[in-house]
Image (cartoon, rainbow, N blue to C red; front, top):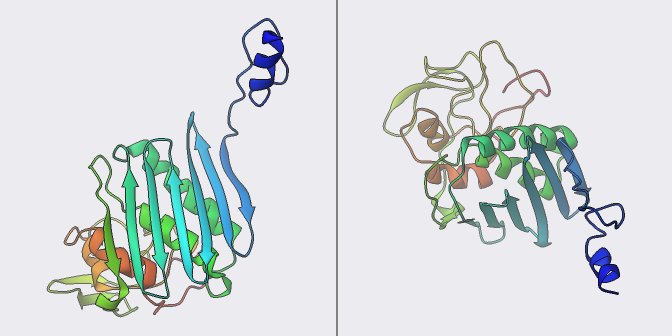
Length: 246
């Protein structure tokens, strides 16, 4: 009886029960979309024994909970579009470089799984925007919870690449993979994934270009200051789809 009871406990981990050790079933490598409907988007990305699970749920009209579960840490967001309030809620250890790479691949998978920007539902838009925001969460630093509000606003910048005021600083910013300002990736000022001169990824994240996102791109402002821009800022620049970084 004892052996049969142990077999029942381990049935979800092994094909059957035997006198030998239970077989460990590895999680599938790569991206997997687990659930995608009007109020829920759940996806994972696994590589080299590490994984991240994203779960975005619209718990009531225009109120969305999003979690990124690495096992350790777990990073959560509460975004209330009715009140214009967002909460950043991390727990556990700091993010490490390998986990940051998981987010990059997760974003690519989620972006490919949802429609282009103008056709996205609320849950799809939140999933892409917050996964884009996870790309700029600092690596190797202790993270603290904080709240951000859309009422404090943001300042859009011009979509045309050129020398711009980005909030007390003058830097090159605007659309285009060549709009690097001589510093790293292009598309400076975009609240979403940047791009290189020779690499033009799909249009992911938002196409909101703001001062706080530009300041972060140049190391002149914190990731937390750009939180409301990533979650709430309107898309003031166009997205021409896959193959063009706008």
